Length: 229
Image 1: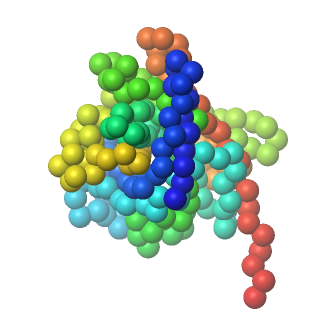
Image 2: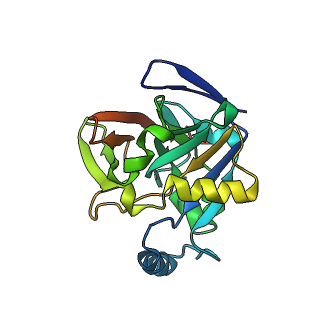
């Protein structure tokens, strides 16, 4: 399985042998808005979930710290998210993540689309205990990158828009899943209308206005070669 290494603010590191990855979906704090979004997606052919918020198991090897994501076609894209990581001893870490998703496959099943591309995680993390009291103030931003080097901001919000890490730790505890090696990806915030999400790269930033510190990740989307046969 995947082994992820996170650097904490004090310079120490945590190695996490990933055994379980869960992607939250339709995880906005205001579930009335989520219901409206589900209806919009249904018009695009994306199957509605049976319940919201949803939780999709993902193959553990898809949790990656990488600067390259291979894509089989041009309709894949990321989503700015936070990630909750359970380290050894049950220590809870918070970091930035980007859930890369196959949008063509999404219309056939959200769970399938989540398993068709990696969840990219940053290499830095904060102990959740250090920021949990102000978690709603933390910012989440994403930019798409183009071949000419231009970046355009596509997402900008705060964690107040999403269900909290505390909510999801409760869900995991009830399921018996709050165990070392678990990675939970939060679900995302709205994208800016008119910005093309099918870009050559993604950058995500999780920020703490109280300290000015940030956690970032960035990767390029690399097309796979055409198949033979």
